[in-house]
Image (cartoon, rainbow, N blue to C red; front, side):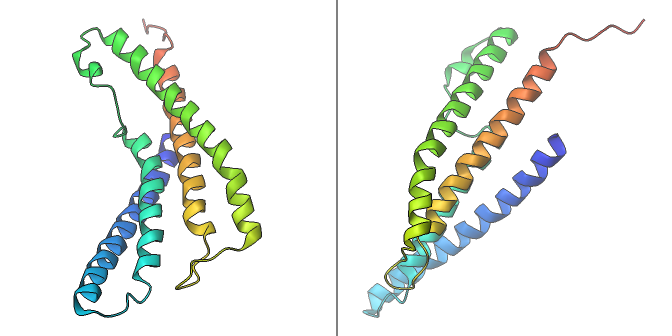
Length: 162
């Protein structure tokens, strides 16, 4: 279970890195083209797509790495059991948020797929950035469930070996 999650996280990380590099190049080109008075030549569309992929797939990756927004009070808690309870509750909240997010966004995604909307300049299907949101929320759900299962597994009492 952990191996599968780690493999998926490595793929997420690669996608996020590629999206970040594409976004940086796109923004750099936009600045250069604007400074030279040249047309933007699709850099806005490419930047839009890459920032959506970076943000939403990165959201799923942040749940895996536990780099998402956390309450700083966790660092102040001294009791290990209390820290575990608070961490467990934060994972439940992340799972709940992700389920609500995908419940809201998925109908919009299916509408966009049916409508076939595209960006004006390059004709990139709008379903790609919205799809990144759906996939990111799905990945966040996946990682939160795995983390909860691992926490439950670690909470179980084990028999002492004599």
